[in-house]
Amino acid sequence: MSPEEEINQLIDEVDATEEKAESEYEADSEMLVEVIEPRCYWCSKAQPEIKELLESKYQKRNQEEIEFFLSCTPEHESRAVKFLRFAEKFYFIYIAFMFVIPIILLTIAFIIYQHMFSIGFSIFISMGLGLTILPLLGNQLVKNIGLKKSILLGRIIGVILVIIGVILILTFGLAYFG
Ligand SMILES: [Zn+2]
Image (cartoon, rainbow, N blue to C red; front, side):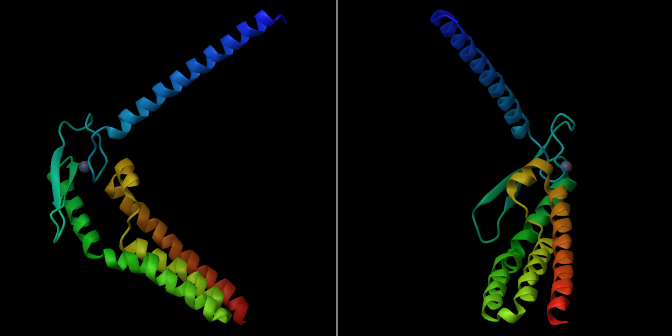
């Protein structure tokens, strides 16, 4: 291959890469459009399916901050508000089960190392209970699948964590003490 041919080939390759990059960018912008498509906060139905979305407000207790969200019906608006109130009221329980109790359990597990397994596995139960009581999985997920499904998913994960914790404590704990 002559040097000229080699250069031509290189130019072709660069062109092909640029074309590929452009088509990837187009795919990305399509995804972006889908993400910002207006959806009901509760059931995640998008606007084309339902004619109009209500603009709902949620006023946090003892705070001036107002959260805005969209809902497809007054019923879904009130369900979302009900959950947001519930979440605000019991957020301390969530923090306790998800962070405070696990840290305390881990500390105890390292101090009283004879019961390390049982105490360590109790973390699954603590976090599982936290998620079952208040299934908060993150705002991005709620935006993608809706609050209703994310609550259900959170509770399912919570129950699974509790079951895993109980099974681990029974199998390892009994083997350890037996
Ligand atoms: Zn809805």
